[in-house]
Amino acid sequence: MQPTRIEKVETLLWQKWLIVRIHCEDGTVGIGEGGVHGWQRPTETMVRVMEPYLLGKDPAKIEHHYQFLYRSSHFMGSVVQGALSAIDIALWDIKGKRLGVPIYDLMGGKTRDRVRCYMHVGGDTAEDLAADAADAAAQGFTAVRFSPFPPEFWLHKAHAEWEQEAVRRVGAVRESVGPDIDICIEIHRQMAPAESIALGRRLEQFNPYFYEDPMLPDSPAIMGDLQERVNIPIATGERFTTIFEYQQLLEAKACAYVRPDLCLCGGLTGCKKVAAMAEAHHVKVIPHNPLSPVSTAACVQLDACIPNFALQEYTGESEPPKSELLVTPLELKDGYLTVPDGPGLGIELNEDTLTKYPVDDKVLETPIAFDGSIADR
Image (cartoon, rainbow, N blue to C red; front, side, top):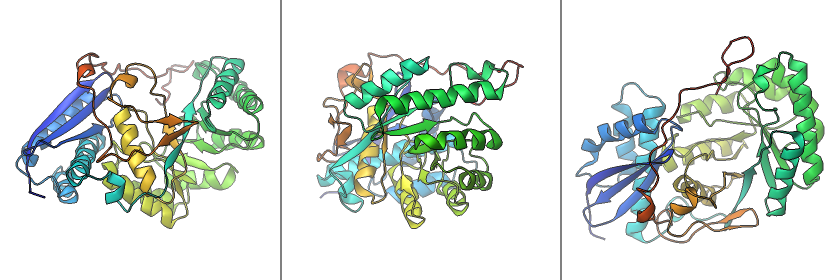
């Protein structure tokens, strides 16, 4: 194979997402996505800052380029890591395409043929939520994820009021889907540890698959205490941007599942490292995936090659605009995504739709509680 060089880095602000394409002199184009959810413009700026370094470089030196750009940043953070993650995914896509193999073949080989997904469900009332969960189960999903809280629960003055409603909603979902469907409970960091422990103990009766972000992830030691006191497996990590944060989380025995975001935590390279660290602690991986089908495709490549994969977040890609981004969407069958066998990510962008959806910029808003205080987004 003849060597090639990077000749252009292209950014595409598409709806709510930032797509990155890296063009090589031999015509190979790698696709990536930056994952600072809602902050696509500053992430695009960071990619532009990094572009001059990449031009003329060998795209095969993925780890070397990451280390150079990461260490030269001085100040790190999510925008830097979102840009680096997009570049990393695109460079792996280039390598796979140039060698004619899927990325998972370059990262140890395939460990599974299909990837089990959980589907987001919702509803304003417990009855609506239960009906949506039942519908997802009827579509073949064997796991559903939802928030147990009523709409605008931060406006309720008494903790007991919305905790009781949360218990009712989880119970309604369990009754609607039966005992053979996994239910995944998303707290979205909305409770203090003591509150989360109290609610978690009440929810144990419904046998949840995981209890996600039951508190702010800033203090792994405190979350470790929470995990010890609640008999539900904790899943966390979607906000983390480096392997070092996961190291602290795992050392604190603070979770049963890690949730790396491939478009935020160093791309495929970074998240393969996270998966290996988790494996050494007997912890499984549930990749975070709130973005476009490019993110989903990258997740599937990781899921295919790690032994400790558990479950894949899937937000649905059968409706526009997501359904229009890829020429051939990933195959979803009975709640499982089929691992593609095409080179690289195994996807091709639909050029006709790249200019169809204007950028949807983030609106600065977050919940305000009844007393005027700020809730976490």
